[in-house]
Length: 308
Length: 194
Image (cartoon, rainbow over all chains, first blue to last red; front, side):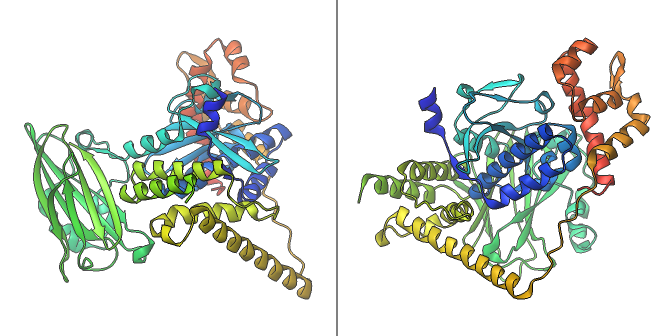
């Protein structure tokens, strides 16, 4: 068991920034025991946050209970909000213990649990592994899966199930076009006026938009991907449009919008010219079929995976 | 080229082939870093900024592995050079701050103490009768007000509460998580703590 644990180990330095935050949060607590708990929780959350940052997985510390002074006081929580996925619990484990305490108040509403061995004398956090579910206060280290399974868990979480849209369930940052653009882009609303309301009954069109961030290479240039679906019996019509999300009227030239089939082969593609307001693709699919939409601009590539 | 470098070059090649943002690429990066850590070839120092500089170095690797040129040297050497540059950065920032403090002798204001949270939360919970209305089905005595007060530090542990109310730990904690915590989040927001 020990060898297994060592093989999975992933060491991260505990930075000065983490120590300062942990100290600040713990100083606000009324008892020594609570202060110690908050300090260790903060170090565990910071370490997992640093790991996800290295992998390019976006997180939101400020939306996490572990960053909220009232929740720190009222619960033993070490959650980290992973943008578009949910709360990942980062449980600290003191040196020499072989089971990790998981308080009952964090048994629900979690996408998983990472156990972090905190070695303060060496200023090292050891990410020991991951499990998806917990329903006991004691979690044995031998039950942990390698961190690689966490990568899979977070990436599968990003798959969008279009069938859920029919039940009015929208995850991973998909929102109404109006919510995404506000009232600033009236021309955009005009273009989609024929699509009707966003209702999920059979045959109705459902339309959602998502911000696509192409990263710092392009000066944080953002695009909006709009997906409109219409189910008729076994066939679903899918209509994709790519718009500029900033104030700009035109897409940059040479943006590619590509649809890949289940095997990753290009099925359809469109490329923007010098003065395109948007580019679009239409196709049909059957229930449970999977496809990916890839957007390429220069060196930036973003892929979104869908299941019909 | 030694065995470690051979393995690292191969893994970097594979990571470059994996799609950016894909779990394949993330898993390869995890393997690369784990392998480097095990080798013990990363430079160590007792500088107070060592950990911050090392974290910057891992980030540098994750963001720039695709431009690493194996013709120009070892992965570990590349990282060690970066690590030493980051340490120098931290050191020179510290020297500048010292010089500035010394020259000016400015009174650095103490950080503002935040208001004590416990009495504020306790007062709100005690004064808020609505919290008494939300209770576990069939147990009006086990309501949000009672549970929050019992879980404020020094908190009563869940097993003791379960025995006392004759309700399982999971039912109690689930109720606490689903009903009480959202109210506390809202209270935190209204108080401007977030």
